[in-house]
Image (cartoon, rainbow, N blue to C red; front, side, top):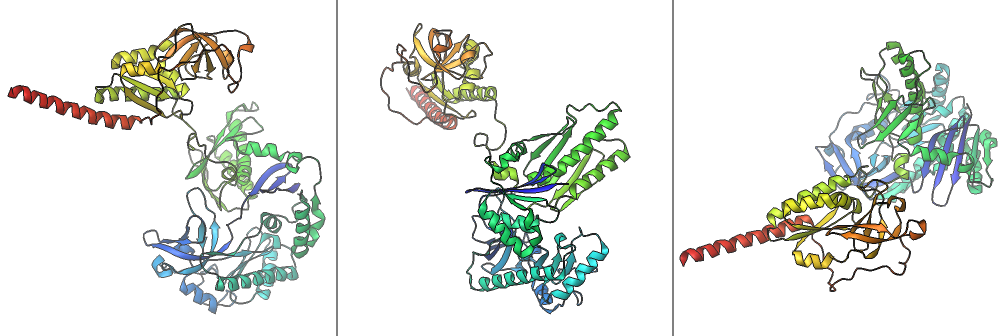
Length: 639
């Protein structure tokens, strides 16, 4: 399997892509200082017994979360100081791991206490970072744990002889008072290479301790390494054929780092100097665009639908256009599921999805088919360096799994919630909003008995549904209300927002009755709305709706029309010319000969109340009217 790492360095961000057999499998983006892995001098801000946790200030925008289980207790600290090599003494379980006697959060930390913590999970959404006092420093071949006394070897090193060899080497080179984990990359490495890596980690920890002793809280003590260094340390090994960089500075820095922990890999580092941007040359930009899509197509014609929610990630498998090879339905389902779980394994790495995941596979009745799919899923997840746990396929065809999450997904890094729908992905339809306006008008009519008419400002598409074709819907509404309604388009309003203002009939009529039959006006033709092609709705500068029987061809453009009929909230018109020369861009200056509505008198702009404000004012006015009527009746009876 050919494996490449491609590095794109820009002024504002660094991007690193990992490809296997010319297929993108991982994408890492760094735009600002990374906090995961960094070590801070923190101050305890609050302690919550009910949560068995505390919140600490590490100098970021939001306080970090510190769970009691992530705090090194006093008993553990004493055991560590007295333990030697982690192989003897009390406090270890049958697997050689240190037992952790449970202590409450109040026993572990106090408010305003200063402690040294490491970020294990970055801020995400409205949540702050998660931190731990159990610090670990990863190197090229070893992980240094200053608050542990155990020794472990990566489970991915499966050869028993190699595991024993590495364990003997580490037991020989390490000093008492800390723990070590042998990483997968240490396989077949010499004692000299492991010792060199350990000495580097010991020097780093000594520097951290010295700086922590003189640094006030809250403050950064140790910043995790740059994205390039982490990739060289964690991903660039013997299984990588090429490391390709487009920055001469990064190329030089990579050679300097490899001099320290991978001299034999220097000949695999290349500097890209092509004319095209490096990600464009390797077609990674196209893959990144597909990465942001909700639907992922499979080669067979099936597809995945990936939905990220607050609590979990749901992945649905569909057969789509795949009809099978003619051997039967069960085989078609099996082939779709096998291809789907392989792609799911790639998408988890590529999008860096984490937390709880639910895979909704196509139901399989055959037990052997289920086992084949489970085996394929296990094989796909073996390539993932993040810790994954998964269940067997349930009778409903569901697989529940978890994947370690350390920060934002790639999608969350590159996108932000839609400001128009607030991230919901859906809006109330124009027709639904129009119906709601009608309900509000009926309610206002009951409480605002003195109102003779209402002025409604709303989104253009909502206005088309509120007025209706040829004004029929609004005419029926006015008849039921026994009030006049003046609807005007407000382009600046959100589709779900509207304003209702009561008033006197003659006042609103003078204010809005600005057009006459036969008048030539300039309108903007709307896209969408109630009317179907070839008809379309348009609106004048003052917000009056105009129906054009042949207006669909001019959608999105401005044009001149002659008003055939004019109503209170809408008009009918016809375009002055059927040719395209009549249309002009929206922002172009108006052409000559176009009539402008003339207002009867200038009016001072005033703030328009919302519907709720109107209801309140109407209730108060209605109460005052009732009180006046009761007083008048009493006076009459007295007389």
